[in-house]
Image 1 (cartoon, rainbow, N blue to C red):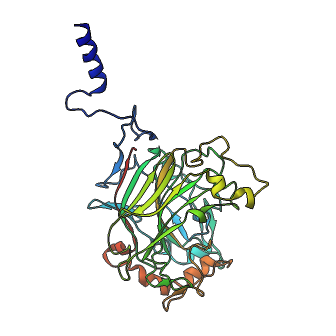
Image 2: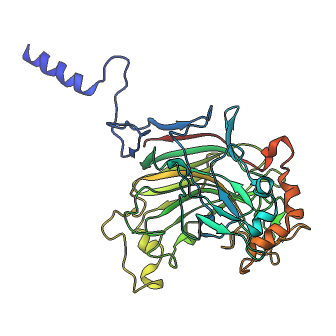
Image 3: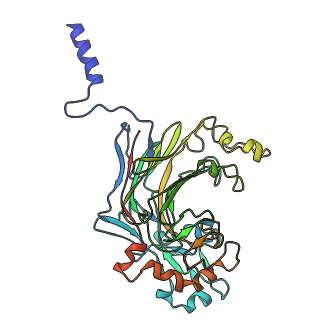
Amino acid sequence: MRLVLLLTCLLALVVAEEGVPKCTPSVTTASGTRAPTGTICSGSLIFEDTFDFLDFEKWQHENTLAGGGNWEFQWYTNHRSNSYCENGVFYIRPTLLADDTGEAFLTSGTLNIHGGQPADQCTAPFFWGCERAGTDSNPINPIKSARVRTVESFNFKYGRLEIRAQMPTGDWLWPALWLLPKNQVYGSWPASGEIDLTESRGNIDYHDANGVHIGVEQVGSTLHFGPNPNMNGYESTMSHLNSAAGQGFNTGFHLYQLEWTTDHITFSVDNQVLKRIDAGSGFWARGGFQTSSPASENPWLHGTLMAPFDQEFYIIMNLAVGGTNGFFPDVPPATNGARGKPWINLSGTATRDFWNGRSYWTPTWKMTEDRGKSSSLQVDYVRVWAL
């Protein structure tokens, strides 16, 4: 009788209750008000948004003129002209600030975005991100757009992320689906890492000096990591995928996928692997920093071999415009059809030059057709599963 009872008890520990599958604990961790609590089961869906409505408990808008640290030309703001849900799709849409303020405001007005309500506060003061005074040579950021993040609601470490999205069409549009660390455990950027799931360019006829299409027919992924901003090992992790000619990533929805484990990160598009990045001997060795920056100390000495990618990260989706960091190569040597490029990356008047060239790029945005949906980043869903 005792043997029967013992076997029964052991069976109860191994087999879950009737109708409830057994939970195999996952290596995935998650935190935030919308994150799961208790034990996370391997393979379980731990975050999802299908955008039946814009859930402000999941997504927090950024409010800044800082230009992502790249002197981009947009103001990220919270307004339903720039971010909204419709028929189960989330749109991030660029608009012209001058349509709201008048063109003269760009060169003579002052834009102060310090708000009185918690949701109106400026989120990034660096690079004069909270207040700009326009001048003839340096106008106020002329584009309004949006950047949303889950830092207050959902952060996770290790798992599978999938975003179904359609890239925008329009010269100098820069959509991005990416992740940043919840805590700067290893120091300021890029010491604590950055995971770029997908970046693209909205240009229709943009080619690099070698003739490779780098506009809507190309998407790319990478990791950013290094001991300081001047030492970044991203080039060792970069990957690109080009579509068939005329079938750019702006013509339909595609799956942008991340598999993030305790020993590797894999980027995929539509289940096609772009690049698998193994931890190997660690990211200090991968970046070659012992040679390129011998005086710097390894910030990941006390982390795992996956450091800095062994901490919780949050999800970001945004639509930037232009910038001077080189993401948009100058024309020449690159080419952009007959429209060229209105600014050069080393110019001190890049924003002015971009705005003065609007007669060339605004027609490609088609802002008056179907409420500018073609120039919007469109997201069908975001899902995260535990490993």
